[in-house]
Length: 247
Image (cartoon, rainbow, N blue to C red; front, top):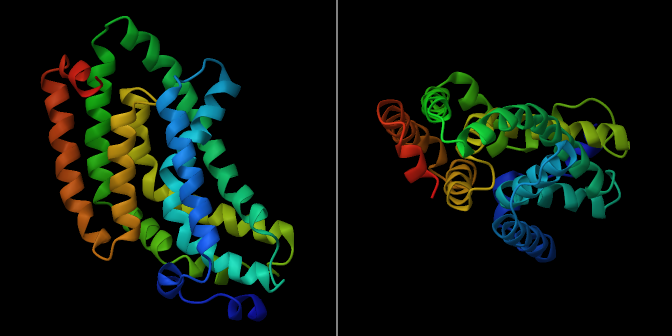
Protein backbone atom coordinates (compact mmCIF):
# COMPACT_ATOMS: atom_id res chain seq x y z
CA UNK A 1 0.00 0.00 0.00
CA UNK A 2 2.98 2.28 0.60
CA UNK A 3 3.76 2.29 -3.13
CA UNK A 4 0.18 3.25 -3.91
CA UNK A 5 0.25 6.03 -1.31
CA UNK A 6 3.49 7.39 -2.74
CA UNK A 7 2.00 7.40 -6.23
CA UNK A 8 -0.67 9.99 -5.47
CA UNK A 9 -0.06 13.63 -4.69
CA UNK A 10 -1.98 16.19 -2.70
CA UNK A 11 -5.50 16.86 -4.05
CA UNK A 12 -5.01 20.60 -3.96
CA UNK A 13 -1.99 20.42 -6.25
CA UNK A 14 -3.69 17.83 -8.46
CA UNK A 15 -6.72 20.07 -8.89
CA UNK A 16 -4.53 22.98 -9.99
CA UNK A 17 -2.15 21.00 -12.15
CA UNK A 18 -2.35 21.12 -15.92
CA UNK A 19 -0.38 17.89 -16.27
CA UNK A 20 -3.49 16.00 -17.34
CA UNK A 21 -5.33 18.46 -19.61
CA UNK A 22 -6.86 15.73 -21.72
CA UNK A 23 -8.47 14.12 -18.67
CA UNK A 24 -9.90 17.45 -17.56
CA UNK A 25 -11.24 18.15 -21.04
CA UNK A 26 -12.68 14.65 -21.25
CA UNK A 27 -14.51 14.98 -17.93
CA UNK A 28 -16.00 18.35 -18.79
CA UNK A 29 -16.78 17.17 -22.32
CA UNK A 30 -18.64 14.13 -21.02
CA UNK A 31 -20.47 16.31 -18.51
CA UNK A 32 -21.49 18.71 -21.30
CA UNK A 33 -22.73 15.80 -23.40
CA UNK A 34 -24.69 14.47 -20.42
CA UNK A 35 -26.23 17.92 -19.84
CA UNK A 36 -27.31 18.08 -23.46
CA UNK A 37 -28.80 14.59 -23.25
CA UNK A 38 -30.64 15.43 -20.01
CA UNK A 39 -32.05 18.66 -21.41
CA UNK A 40 -33.23 17.11 -24.66
CA UNK A 41 -34.89 13.96 -23.29
CA UNK A 42 -37.62 13.15 -20.80
CA UNK A 43 -37.13 10.51 -18.12
CA UNK A 44 -38.10 7.16 -19.72
CA UNK A 45 -40.44 4.72 -18.03
CA UNK A 46 -39.33 1.40 -16.60
CA UNK A 47 -36.49 0.61 -14.22
CA UNK A 48 -33.82 0.15 -16.88
CA UNK A 49 -34.75 3.38 -18.62
CA UNK A 50 -34.88 5.27 -15.35
CA UNK A 51 -31.44 4.01 -14.26
CA UNK A 52 -29.99 4.96 -17.64
CA UNK A 53 -31.41 8.47 -17.30
CA UNK A 54 -30.31 8.59 -13.66
CA UNK A 55 -26.70 7.79 -14.61
CA UNK A 56 -26.76 10.41 -17.37
CA UNK A 57 -27.97 12.92 -14.79
CA UNK A 58 -25.21 11.83 -12.37
CA UNK A 59 -22.61 12.25 -15.10
CA UNK A 60 -23.87 15.75 -15.88
CA UNK A 61 -23.85 16.84 -12.25
CA UNK A 62 -20.93 14.92 -10.69
CA UNK A 63 -18.19 14.51 -13.31
CA UNK A 64 -16.84 18.07 -12.91
CA UNK A 65 -16.41 17.49 -9.16
CA UNK A 66 -14.44 14.27 -9.84
CA UNK A 67 -11.65 15.99 -11.77
CA UNK A 68 -9.23 16.32 -8.80
CA UNK A 69 -9.49 12.70 -7.64
CA UNK A 70 -9.40 11.36 -11.20
CA UNK A 71 -6.33 13.46 -11.92
CA UNK A 72 -4.64 11.85 -8.92
CA UNK A 73 -5.70 8.40 -10.00
CA UNK A 74 -4.70 8.96 -13.63
CA UNK A 75 -1.19 9.95 -12.58
CA UNK A 76 -0.80 6.69 -10.71
CA UNK A 77 -2.36 4.71 -13.57
CA UNK A 78 0.17 6.09 -16.03
CA UNK A 79 2.94 4.76 -13.82
CA UNK A 80 1.32 1.34 -13.80
CA UNK A 81 0.87 1.29 -10.03
CA UNK A 82 -2.95 1.13 -10.04
CA UNK A 83 -5.67 -0.51 -12.09
CA UNK A 84 -6.99 1.47 -15.11
CA UNK A 85 -9.17 4.54 -14.53
CA UNK A 86 -12.40 2.85 -15.78
CA UNK A 87 -12.10 0.34 -12.91
CA UNK A 88 -12.12 3.18 -10.38
CA UNK A 89 -15.04 4.84 -12.17
CA UNK A 90 -16.98 1.56 -12.22
CA UNK A 91 -16.85 1.40 -8.42
CA UNK A 92 -18.02 5.01 -8.17
CA UNK A 93 -20.87 4.51 -10.64
CA UNK A 94 -21.96 1.30 -8.93
CA UNK A 95 -22.75 3.27 -5.78
CA UNK A 96 -24.82 5.84 -7.66
CA UNK A 97 -26.59 3.12 -9.66
CA UNK A 98 -27.62 1.46 -6.39
CA UNK A 99 -28.85 4.85 -5.15
CA UNK A 100 -31.04 5.02 -8.25
CA UNK A 101 -33.15 2.07 -7.03
CA UNK A 102 -34.87 3.89 -4.12
CA UNK A 103 -34.99 7.01 -6.30
CA UNK A 104 -36.93 5.01 -8.88
CA UNK A 105 -39.36 3.72 -6.25
CA UNK A 106 -40.00 7.27 -5.03
CA UNK A 107 -40.31 8.61 -8.57
CA UNK A 108 -42.95 5.99 -9.39
CA UNK A 109 -45.07 7.40 -6.56
CA UNK A 110 -44.41 11.09 -7.15
CA UNK A 111 -44.66 11.38 -10.91
CA UNK A 112 -48.22 10.08 -11.55
CA UNK A 113 -49.59 12.04 -8.60
CA UNK A 114 -47.90 15.24 -9.82
CA UNK A 115 -49.28 14.70 -13.31
CA UNK A 116 -52.76 14.20 -11.82
CA UNK A 117 -52.52 17.51 -9.96
CA UNK A 118 -52.73 16.02 -6.47
CA UNK A 119 -51.66 18.06 -3.47
CA UNK A 120 -49.62 15.53 -1.50
CA UNK A 121 -46.57 15.54 -3.84
CA UNK A 122 -46.15 19.27 -3.21
CA UNK A 123 -46.37 18.74 0.55
CA UNK A 124 -43.93 15.84 0.32
CA UNK A 125 -41.56 17.97 -1.78
CA UNK A 126 -41.73 20.68 0.88
CA UNK A 127 -40.88 18.13 3.55
CA UNK A 128 -37.97 16.83 1.45
CA UNK A 129 -36.60 20.36 1.14
CA UNK A 130 -36.82 20.87 4.90
CA UNK A 131 -35.10 17.53 5.57
CA UNK A 132 -32.38 18.42 3.06
CA UNK A 133 -31.90 21.74 4.86
CA UNK A 134 -31.50 19.98 8.21
CA UNK A 135 -29.05 17.46 6.73
CA UNK A 136 -26.91 20.30 5.41
CA UNK A 137 -26.10 21.17 9.03
CA UNK A 138 -25.49 17.61 10.24
CA UNK A 139 -22.10 16.17 11.32
CA UNK A 140 -22.51 13.35 8.79
CA UNK A 141 -22.86 15.84 5.94
CA UNK A 142 -19.74 17.67 7.15
CA UNK A 143 -17.75 14.43 7.40
CA UNK A 144 -18.76 13.27 3.92
CA UNK A 145 -17.99 16.69 2.46
CA UNK A 146 -14.50 16.53 3.99
CA UNK A 147 -14.03 13.12 2.36
CA UNK A 148 -15.08 14.53 -1.02
CA UNK A 149 -12.80 17.55 -0.69
CA UNK A 150 -9.75 15.50 0.40
CA UNK A 151 -9.90 12.45 -1.88
CA UNK A 152 -6.37 11.33 -0.99
CA UNK A 153 -7.87 9.59 2.03
CA UNK A 154 -9.83 7.33 -0.33
CA UNK A 155 -6.51 5.86 -1.45
CA UNK A 156 -4.81 5.61 1.93
CA UNK A 157 -7.73 4.09 3.86
CA UNK A 158 -8.07 0.96 1.72
CA UNK A 159 -5.94 -2.09 2.45
CA UNK A 160 -4.39 -3.94 -0.45
CA UNK A 161 -2.74 -2.97 -3.72
CA UNK A 162 -4.50 -0.54 -6.03
CA UNK A 163 -3.11 -2.54 -8.93
CA UNK A 164 -5.73 -5.16 -8.00
CA UNK A 165 -8.96 -4.28 -9.88
CA UNK A 166 -11.11 -5.32 -6.92
CA UNK A 167 -9.20 -2.99 -4.60
CA UNK A 168 -9.32 -0.15 -7.13
CA UNK A 169 -13.05 -0.68 -7.55
CA UNK A 170 -13.46 -0.51 -3.75
CA UNK A 171 -11.60 2.80 -3.72
CA UNK A 172 -13.96 4.14 -6.37
CA UNK A 173 -16.94 2.85 -4.40
CA UNK A 174 -15.60 4.46 -1.22
CA UNK A 175 -15.33 7.77 -3.01
CA UNK A 176 -18.83 7.22 -4.36
CA UNK A 177 -20.14 6.61 -0.83
CA UNK A 178 -18.64 9.88 0.38
CA UNK A 179 -20.21 11.62 -2.60
CA UNK A 180 -23.56 9.96 -1.90
CA UNK A 181 -23.34 10.84 1.79
CA UNK A 182 -22.58 14.43 0.87
CA UNK A 183 -25.23 14.83 -1.83
CA UNK A 184 -28.11 12.37 -1.27
CA UNK A 185 -30.37 14.96 0.35
CA UNK A 186 -29.81 17.46 -2.45
CA UNK A 187 -30.38 14.76 -5.05
CA UNK A 188 -33.61 13.69 -3.34
CA UNK A 189 -34.97 17.14 -4.12
CA UNK A 190 -34.71 16.33 -7.82
CA UNK A 191 -36.83 13.21 -7.32
CA UNK A 192 -39.40 15.15 -5.30
CA UNK A 193 -39.81 17.97 -7.83
CA UNK A 194 -39.54 15.74 -10.90
CA UNK A 195 -36.42 14.07 -12.25
CA UNK A 196 -34.76 15.72 -15.28
CA UNK A 197 -36.01 19.23 -14.48
CA UNK A 198 -33.18 21.19 -16.17
CA UNK A 199 -33.28 24.30 -13.99
CA UNK A 200 -33.40 22.28 -10.77
CA UNK A 201 -30.56 20.08 -12.05
CA UNK A 202 -28.47 23.15 -12.86
CA UNK A 203 -29.16 24.74 -9.48
CA UNK A 204 -28.40 21.61 -7.46
CA UNK A 205 -25.30 20.89 -9.58
CA UNK A 206 -24.03 24.42 -8.91
CA UNK A 207 -24.50 23.96 -5.16
CA UNK A 208 -22.73 20.58 -5.21
CA UNK A 209 -19.82 21.95 -7.24
CA UNK A 210 -19.47 25.00 -4.99
CA UNK A 211 -19.44 22.90 -1.82
CA UNK A 212 -16.93 20.39 -3.16
CA UNK A 213 -14.60 22.47 -5.31
CA UNK A 214 -14.50 26.07 -4.08
CA UNK A 215 -12.10 27.06 -1.28
CA UNK A 216 -14.97 28.38 0.86
CA UNK A 217 -17.25 25.44 0.01
CA UNK A 218 -17.83 24.17 3.57
CA UNK A 219 -18.98 27.62 4.67
CA UNK A 220 -21.82 27.43 2.15
CA UNK A 221 -23.64 24.65 4.02
CA UNK A 222 -25.52 27.02 6.34
CA UNK A 223 -26.67 29.48 3.62
CA UNK A 224 -27.76 26.57 1.44
CA UNK A 225 -29.68 25.12 4.39
CA UNK A 226 -31.48 28.42 4.90
CA UNK A 227 -32.43 28.67 1.25
CA UNK A 228 -33.74 25.09 1.14
CA UNK A 229 -35.67 25.53 4.38
CA UNK A 230 -37.34 28.69 3.08
CA UNK A 231 -38.37 26.95 -0.15
CA UNK A 232 -39.64 23.93 1.78
CA UNK A 233 -41.74 25.95 4.19
CA UNK A 234 -43.17 27.94 1.28
CA UNK A 235 -44.29 24.69 -0.36
CA UNK A 236 -45.79 23.36 2.86
CA UNK A 237 -47.80 26.54 3.29
CA UNK A 238 -48.70 26.99 -0.40
CA UNK A 239 -48.55 23.61 -2.20
CA UNK A 240 -49.64 25.20 -5.47
CA UNK A 241 -46.18 26.75 -5.68
CA UNK A 242 -44.83 23.38 -6.86
CA UNK A 243 -46.02 24.17 -10.36
CA UNK A 244 -44.15 27.48 -10.19
CA UNK A 245 -41.01 25.73 -8.90
CA UNK A 246 -41.05 23.15 -11.69
CA UNK A 247 -41.92 25.22 -14.79
